[in-house]
Image (tube, rainbow, N blue to C red; front, top):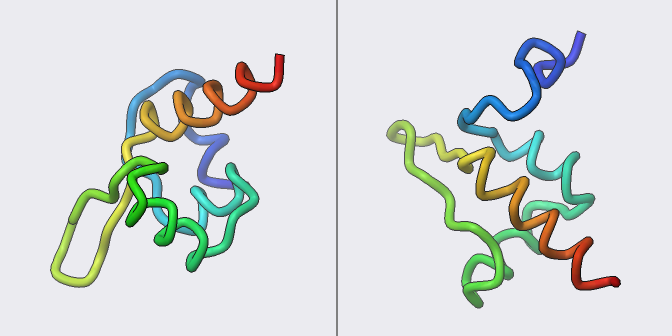
Length: 70
């Protein structure tokens, strides 16, 4: 069972990098390059050696990309 199926749609939570990679199709280096250029939501420090992303920001970023296609 994947982590994403444990949470109802629309529930705001912190996504770890592997989930962000799965949702966007981007790998780590590309995500960090986009963050550096201000073109991707910034990571949130959640521990000494751990970061995550706000699920609402990631979902909005994806929605914006899809809307730009139209």
